[in-house]
Image (cartoon, rainbow, N blue to C red; front, side, top):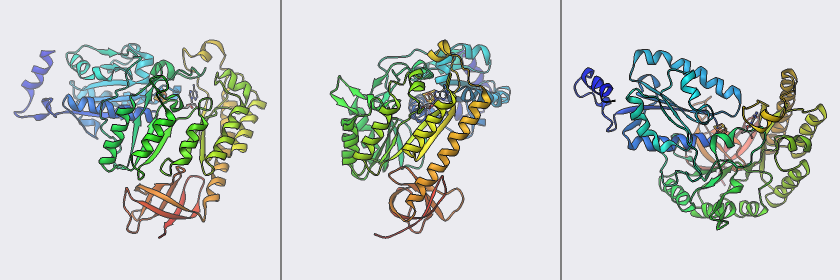
Length: 462
Ligand code: 5AD
Ligand code: SF4
């Protein structure tokens, strides 16, 4: 341990500040997977900042590279292995460079990761980030450092995340961790452990700090936000949502992800009651067939889901709804696939995330159900789902042409210097000529044109 540090010091030019932890060491962190991972990376940065690491954008000059990983589908993991290969030459150039795999893949593969990938020095699961500074020290001494212990309590409650998204307008706030649903296809309960809710006081404090720093939007995050439950029902998700909305009427509040089985009417009434709670619910259905949902162990039927949609339409009439779909789950028949297409059409989802089923080791499905839908059929079904969603998204966007929306300006349009983009309450992206507006403003925009992905509009005075 001492040796490597001593060697570094001896070789260093005098006053090379990069050698010293007091703000000197350079961390490059890359985040794959879901929003939860983004929130986690922000916690990791906070922990490592205190240990003297500063974040840099260019990995080539990093002292420590961390990849926050996703295991949800096989292709997500393959992408990360490919990325690791790209880092190989850096290790040859700089033998002090440390590379760590953190997050879901670290949790799933544990020490197998260091056995398979010699260049990996650290493997750290999602509940072990507090041990990062100690483990980095251990890795510096030349020992592989692994901590993949899952916890029933850890929520990083009092840690103030250091924001990655630098727009200064919207931020993620983690409200719970883990998942107890045990859907038969899903690796998440294995990688993120048991469900636990974060102390509401620390959540509200974090949101207040964001408001004080000028932020205009927060997204409350959890694998299943409807199961948020602080101290046996003392604070439910509906309560938390309401308390957050009341902090500041100018703060937009979003949340993700909702679960059909658990989403209550109480939550819907809270959404309806507050203008600043966004009228957008991501409510993944996965399949439109009750038989497939049963095999997926989702705990609800097609009819139940349709009833939840009816409840949304009644209580929050202007609400946008999006979903996730899995094409070609175990033993899925053509008729079952058609039920997915028909529920999509019935709901008229505004947006969806769509995937082919990918068998994940150790899940119930992997152990008990053959992954027996041939690849070409999975691909064809996925394409049918995507094509239908494109039609539905276009139809939904066309309905917005001519309407005026309150938009929170989030950034510059990629295509034109003179244009900005923002979102309306329904989470739809709207691009417009910037005029006098700037990032962080609320403006009124009239929609003039659309594609299936974007709305185009102009600022109007009201
Ligand atoms: N294969 C394909 N898609 C999956 N998802 C979760 N597990 C799998 C899997 N094994 C999808 C679900 C979930 C989203 C985050 O990823 O649709 O809602
Ligand atoms: Fe990927 Fe799921 Fe882990 Fe998020 S929780 S990073 S989606 S495996």
